[in-house]
Image 1 (cartoon, rainbow over the protein chains, first blue to last red):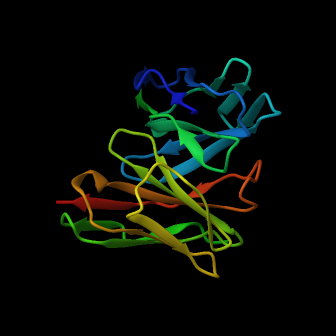
Image 2 (cartoon, rainbow over the protein chains, first blue to last red):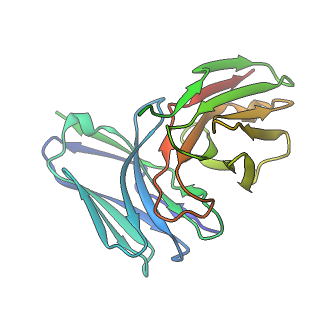
Length: 112
Length: 116
């Protein structure tokens, strides 16, 4: 059974700092991994999707990497801004069907 | 191109009642998945529909059921509501087959269900 872990549960950083959010998963046989952002009480916004054959994806100030063999992904946020404050969730698509298995998320607070 | 929409936004029910939640897929998408997100937790997969057929189900009891219509919109029905059913219910649409590799799932804003 796939399990996704995100540690720590919460993170507070000053504005301008570069930061890394970690995600680990137990079964390396994944199809892809997706990072999402969730604002309080809202739905999920897809940030980046990494295929199982890829090592990283970039979008603006965001860069996500994938190391399948070690069961890890990182989301790098450059020059963080208060508007980046949200919960960041990673999810893997397992091989049995198309469901996404999510971690509990990391709640990020960027202080002005 | 319209995004994924869900209705209603909020809903309050009492234990034992039944509820129907609705989702309209993003234009052109033929696959809908439903997730339950309890407070402070990640979303949990309920089930998925592909071209009006259920394709994959998570660890949820049969009182959770669904439908997908020819226009690919979808409903989630929950019977005999329990207090633990209180959660944010999210639907996600995507394009492709049931084991589609590489397709991004696009989520709606969710329906907040409170069971008293």
